[in-house]
Length: 234
Image 1: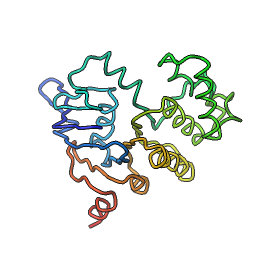
Image 2: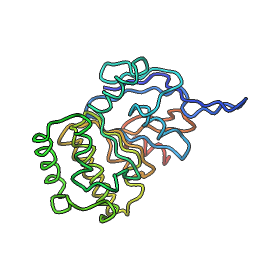
Image 3: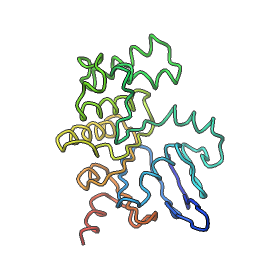
């Protein structure tokens, strides 16, 4: 599904050059759950934003579903993002002036899904995530955990091929984080959705079947989650 080769992201400020990603290479198969770990400043979020087509690499190649993302135009990359990728952010990014129902419905509006079909899809999602009773509430009337569950529901409403989760539990208490991560793991295990998450949390990293470890913008380890965690402790 995903192949990146020698992916590099750097910025120049005068004579100074800062490299965020340094020749990163890896593949992700359809249906995998991959956790990307590393300290702050290691390039995790930058990598996720490039995979989500919200940013572009300085050099290297990125192929998604057989399409060379590094070569296509902005319009096509926007189409791929809209059609195939659900993004879950640490800061929720819900629209404050829209209800839970309207926030979940928004991606379908961008896809120009017909009203009758939208209603059915959103109703199914609300039921699945136990949000029916909260559909008319606004984000400021929800707890942090509830807001993130709405964020997960909004990411899923387009029936994505790939979910990208950027520190999805970063602003949550542990019990709320467990609920959100269980939902994401269920989407992967039962629905077959491919998941790539960025996390600092070693426990939640273990929800994935595989861990890619970043340090200073380079891949320092990549393998089964348990093996990578064991090597990190050695």
